[in-house]
Length: 484
Image (cartoon, rainbow, N blue to C red; front, top):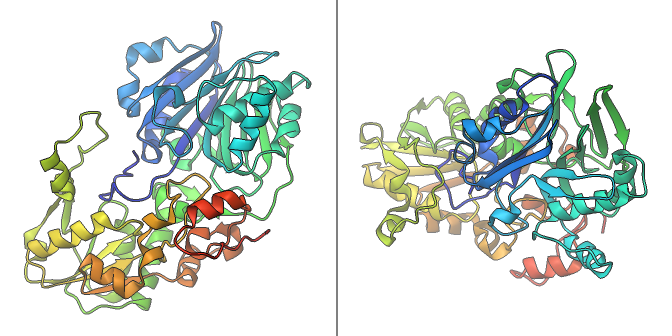
């Protein structure tokens, strides 16, 4: 799972993080390991690294955290000049080792290895078509489907860019992808740019690709630019080249990258996430003031917005919840008593901060709400006289189809309940959400640059009718699509 260093493990999860590097003479496997370590927040289910070198393409992947999958011995066996890596939380495809990435596919012109962040929404018809042509698949992921299509198209093309041009028009959905062949590294992004992908320069003539700029910083790479929507970049011994493989549409970056997914030290669209999140808290304080004695964050992702809320409101900032930093994914199942304890395994309230106080609790989002309810109970048990819950994003009402595990609208609290009903269910004295207008103002970029479908149901990439019907069971009407 991806608990993103936050308390609410029952909340929204993102698909994965990708990293790639072209650096002859460097220990590319080790650099990729550290790049993935910086991206661990994007997926904690499995990890893998593929390296192209003198012994061909070598691949090592397994279930678990990056530090559980790799050690000195496994990294030493991955020798070469080019590498890609992946850390995963499953959205399309089940949680099995066969679905761990990178995915390796054999083709008529050599092997292709691919790592993918995002989700295709037309996987089933594309897979049915290829299976009807006699092709077989070893996994249940859309990532293997993409790699297979490229490998097959490459049989009729002399290079990867032309192969991608042949097949990219058939893909519907979100994909920020790194791809490895024996002699080159590639990065590509869907025509809407739903998921991030950036380019960095390393030691002059070397390059790195990553889901976030924080991974470039860790390996000492200098940020150059984002991969453009619809762009394929190729890196080999001639340098970096750019290809337009599919016409870019209007930009539709997932707004949750700014709210929650990306690390606060990353930059997107030239904006620092930490600064944008503080601004969300400031505007939240303007929109939903509270009479209180202390403002506390839900660690860790509530920190920037809580700082902004305290600054704008003039209410003292405090640390009221201490997170156990050693809670990570484990394959040891908790017993029933531990499951019942839930949040108490991860968070400890500071009575000195909370007892006898009116408390503003700042969280970045509520999706299903189970853990938020437990947190409020925890704070009350510590002696708080009032709990005012403030959320630095709008109500999450509609499912995502582009790489987040909120496919079923029945699981979304704000889809079923109005704000006052949510407040009552959670047990808060008051509840305030940041408005969509306030969110966009906090980021400081036009609304048109983002996908906000989880808030307003306007999906930039049209969703197949059957998928809409099955995931919008809460009500009869179908959701709006910007291009329907």
